Length: 275
Image 1 (spheres, rainbow, N blue to C red):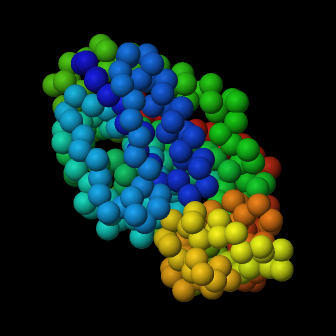
Image 2: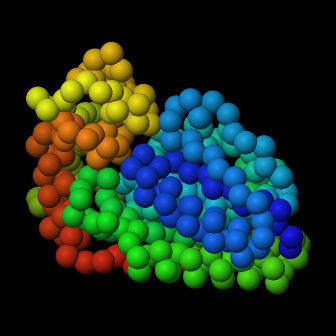
């Protein structure tokens, strides 16, 4: 099939999903001699619309995994997208634990909105809560694996016609009916961090970066110490604050973060590729 354009489309608060999607899309576009375009719907304003995509185009569509599924507050927007018959590669990232059911959820959403999935991948990246879990990933080793996967996708696209590529969705791991992962303490008690929000320390210089990068628009730009909106714990404000002034202090949140680091910090989770 002759692919005229490859799209990078993603939701990426801490920019790791963006990196994975970009590596895939750029390598595929280069291999196929196709054009390249980008749509970043991380910030609220960009979720007011969606680009028009043609049937002779390929979309690398990336989302992070939150609690084993896609971020639930993004589902309303995802219900508005339209693929126009384009081919797609659903991509999810996860924080060195597991992607659970996020990839099959994304594949099913894309298939239900006019896309045809031809490959898929789940990639371990630095956890949004931590700088220890999957630290610095995607790293050089991941980049080489991603580029190799991209070349394999390009070969598949070159070798098959449209009818072959759209005959059936790519098979991926996961259970589309499963619920969200629930953090628990060592006694099995549920830790509820849904209403937890970041706090602002004395190092804050009121530069406003945290408000500008918040994907939910939850931080008051006129008073960055105030978080009146819904926080999804993506940690964009924490990781992108140049002064280290944003952080979480809730005991349940910190306990869950520490438990994840103890259980999964000493291992390197593998990426999962489906072609």
